[in-house]
Length: 476
Image 1 (spheres, rainbow, N blue to C red):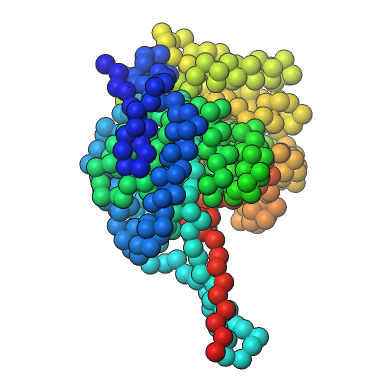
Image 2: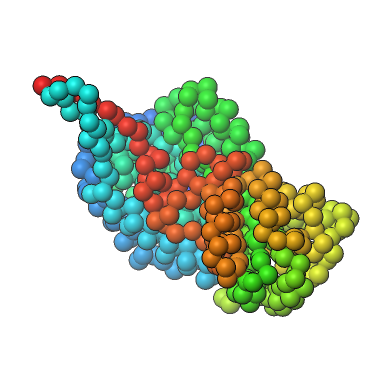
């Protein structure tokens, strides 16, 4: 039995005349129907957020934090239910879905802890008897537009810092994975959060998303998704001079030097490639490995890739990965691999759709003899595919890595601290992981360079993205 959902606006669930089906990507089963909001509905959500914002801002930050803590506590009581929704809706493995729910609750609590830590500044004046104060204030109304790959956590990544700093928010989930967000709205509706502070509208980017990003009453658009859509959002937001915060694509290089612990490197790269079936913008998408250890690394990676357990996460608990999100995602991966082989890559393992009864499954795949001119080394794959290129040393690896149009994350595997520090200095990426998998901390700052985005998230610096400064000059 499928369940139907409605938009959440101004503290009430508002019926919609148009809905669309949401399917389980592992089975093609329809698991729910969610609303397609039109421009008027989106406008009503923004208006509700705008009306609620002044009173919300006037609350002491610690009171806003208490509302966030209430939401996190309620979420923990429904941990298993939300995890199963994510498994069915996104095809995430059961273990990773539980991590996502737990991390979401922890993230909300973490941001709540900043209530007593947001500080301004006292600036020296050039005039006698004058004090200059710099204060941090909320922007107003935030539009949070979510991706489908970590759909639940991204609610918290956008909502928690926005609300803690005194903003109100309108969330639009991906049309691929909206059910978890609508269930979250049900949870919020049962807490004491004031009406209009949190609003949720469903629908496609071409209608609901477009109405949201073009609304002049939105003060910040926080988007996670593709470079193409991010670029369009910037152009549209520019008409109203609306601020943007964009986390876009990535093509993360993993550099493996001759002195690396190869067992550690292989395991970390495998972890970063099959997590969420490779559908993670910050995880290792290609490898640059020194000649001397190329064969040994490929041998270790092959064992891990061929031992990867995949299937329907709803039916099996102990899996390493599930399906790709949809038919288009599967076709994209298929095409990239086929063209890579035509371009001269050697297929080591995988390279085809998985032999399963249903679902968008693709075999874990390793390609060697790749070079930087190939599409497979430049374009984001978003699937369980790993191209590997030989390099002569760290100089060449850094040069090739920095030639990318992306600059989100990178990783380096070496026992030499000088090599690690040099890579950290010279790699043109927002993050570099040394001798570990690519997975950021909530207290860090997740931000990209180049076409990987503008602004960032997490930690103190991510929190301040949702504020603006107000300088006050006091004479006398």
